[in-house]
Image 1 (cartoon, rainbow, N blue to C red):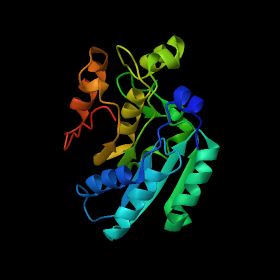
Image 2: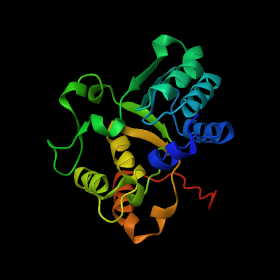
Image 3: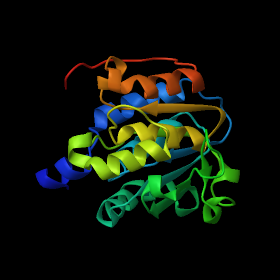
Image 4: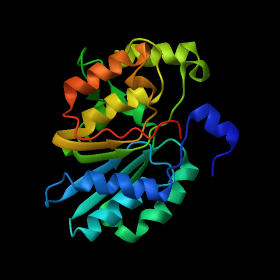
Length: 214
């Protein structure tokens, strides 16, 4: 489990089981009965992946689960949590999801780095379920915040979940479903304008549930 200092510096947020199941069920309600490839790009200890696997299993839908995280300790816990779905249906990657992305080949879009092209881009995901890190500019530091803003074409104050939203979009197949837990600040602030525009241009918003300050 993360310490308070780790939570502050990395923005890690562990999702309660009840909320994980709620989100997984919402996603599943929009899915066809065909095989589903699901991704959590910042999976932590795997609660969201486990919930997605359980819901798809209960719906008799064939599936695979993939999780990324930069923290090896979290991945060990995630491995234990999703092991019941079988090694052939699960994959965990010890890597920062944002660092796996190269935007240089498409100035206004995203492309996976060359080493990931075959294994990742050509095997896109039907589902992304996520609770990405929340780290504001003040904690990220000016240099890192500006680097992320340049890389992902973001304007205003950058929170770490902003580039995650863009990166997750690239991993989805056309017609795929994204279910994500985020801060609600970008919905109304000037600093969230660029990410609001991005989401509006790239998604049909099926549901938006504001839990307020929780």
